[in-house]
Length: 550
Image 1 (cartoon, rainbow, N blue to C red):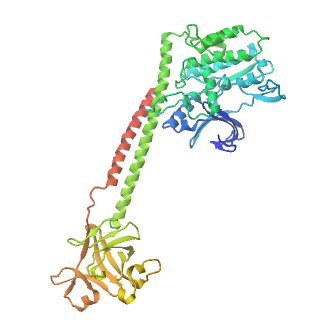
Image 2 (image 1 turned 90 degrees about the vertical axis):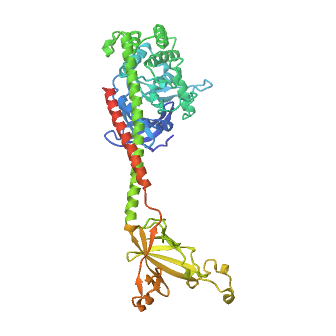
Image 3 (image 1 turned 120 degrees about the vertical axis):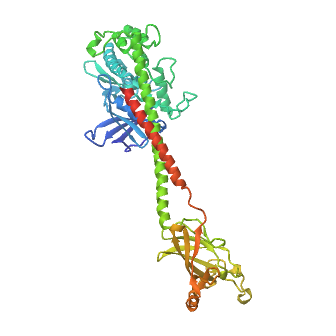
């Protein structure tokens, strides 16, 4: 239940009206457009139904069809829409006739007189049943038959006719008007996604106690033997007419009126499936007591031949086919959109990684010397990041080196500056301290570490990192070669003093794993292919849908 002031589309809730078998009902006020300030009756589809896969397309298609239905006996849809999970339908608010009544409590003691509104047939028979006369009932039934006749011509059945779904208005001459409302809601809440298993019981999980009571009430006005999971048929509405009349007559003043003809008509109307049952709304209307010529009301009598029955079955089959196509189209659109989104995501990742690798070494990838344990790894980053390397023997207390060391890298003069540090060996005898005593925040100083910086140049054409120089607190070391000796690092001062004995050389660290196939591109192209297949199926299904409508 939503609280007062909550927005439902372009409306604001004034009050909660109740919950029925097909959703929640609210008294609302329009907040936008030319209808701003007008009062509305808004019906909200249960969230458990509206969040089913494919329901949104089904809802829009059904409401667009129902929006076209108007005329005598039909309370038309004013608007409908979707706001997050809220699927709503709005109707014009019927203020209703004000009547004075003296409700009776459970102990049959009359309470103080009240003035209440009569908006529906249920209100009328609760508050002022004495007002129902054969002439008023005839006026109501003429309107209801005209509305249902128009609805059935469109290949739709109401399926949930009951006293609360029949709006009425009285006039001073003893007559009145009636309209069917909430058309199509029973079909909407029966929606089931393709592939969804049939429920094992008739229990509806989204209904509260009020909703279950409403569901039981609607069942009393449907033909015996039909299931709550069945889609409504036109014969249900004729049977509901008969049961509505039987119910109303039972509450009316039996002593002052003669209801014999109406009782006979109601029995025949409610006998769905019996030989003398009315085959159509026109036949039911023709038999109304005191009706006269039904052509005056725009209702045409037709013989229910086998050919007409086949036409009706074809119309019903057509609507079922349209619904199935619409749901299938919704599923295909969802898959197309998801595969397209996945393709866009992977191809974007591929594009980003390609641009990144154009300027930067491959992150978390080892670059090493051939036939040597020395290597580097750089973490991802645009201007700085983590770095991993190997401790040189010069900075190892045992003179061996080879241990892993973690540091940081940053950009400096178009080079990658990798900064490392190594804890110095402690002379326990001189300091009187053990190594573990230096562990902890504030226990060490910069003097307790040896720090060096390796400057690397990234050669993209060779997928290699070139060691340009190594800098520590004492000197700068440059790669060089003396004669036939292996390339090694020499102090920059030694190279200058040696004349030309030590020549400049290159120390290149090559990427160990070759680039190979890009999995991001592979998955991106795969999802793009899937998206194109779904797109083609959507186009084919749209063409089939247009052909089906024609």
